[in-house]
Length: 460
Image (cartoon, rainbow, N blue to C red; front, top):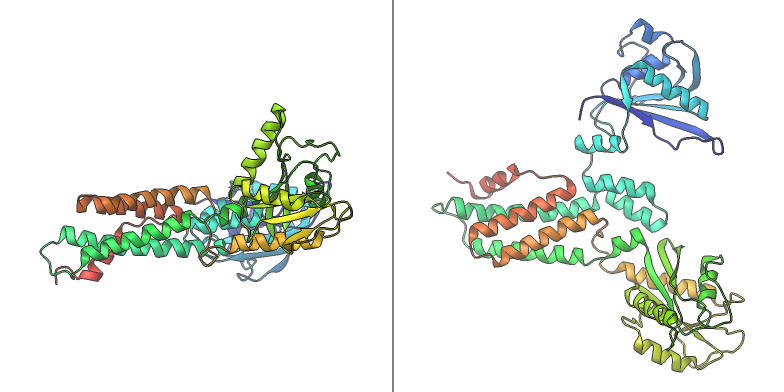
């Protein structure tokens, strides 16, 4: 940190098409109270009044003030002003806020007035949150949670981001780091103080600690809930040609996303739409009809359809109620990789032409009239919920940065379990702890000495 005072508009910038009712300008840094006084007291900047002037209101008490141009003394707007004393602020620094009317002219003049003071500079992207991290107000995972909360588009994304912002991931990673520190402390004690009267069974304790860490981190790496919440749960619509797959895609997306034709084989490539399904972000994919073909382009479409079905988190098999849908169901499920009878869904379409019978686990649908749509939506939401509940006792892995560091830690712990020398075990364990520390931004080597001397009382 350079110790400067920064300022920025904390609400969306108003535009001609969308003027805001209110706009909030935030200031953070040692000169924040001065900014408040010099902008809200006429000629205060010109006279050089101190920020400890009686004009400064009590901290945390919002007051009505007129905002003035510091050089001309011209009134800009009348709004609310408040300031906060360090360190009990969001950034850990002195902070001030101006709550003004949200017109473009008001906001532009207010920002220009702050710039005229020469006491502060415009904040860089994310600088308020970075200062909060640097002052220990949050860790890196919580900072990323704030960014995710701002970007959240669905209810479940909002919930996950809020959990991360509140420290769910930080607590999990801190538990692992604490266990790793204790394990490494035992190991270092055995290496550095071989003549001391140390507790028995240190070697077994070290191995147990490494195994526990590797197992729990491995399970966390295998949890794809966070990836699905960020990128969307992938659902593939599959089935024979001309059964209404594209019509179903259009029905679910409520727009003409795919071409619908009575000509079989119209869809050759994968067509995707993004949906909010019960709060879950979903990527719905329409695929080519599954059949044998001599046409090279259609063959490629079928290959892509089978690949998408295998890669998808969930599959919706669409069949034609007016044909041999039971035989087609049997054959296509047998040929579909990763079919999960508990979650994947069979939809028998065109029930306006023929009534399907003989199966209770299907969804009877008419993509033309919309009959059966609500039942299908309920089944999709239930299947998605079941998928996302797997491993729900622990917070999910959310970012590629975390995955990379955890994979590095997992590999180091694996090396530690087979290392031929105790010193190599200790080094691999140190590497694993550094990787964990990079996720939250806490890499404090001195804690190792604290654990050693607290647990073993060396020298007594």
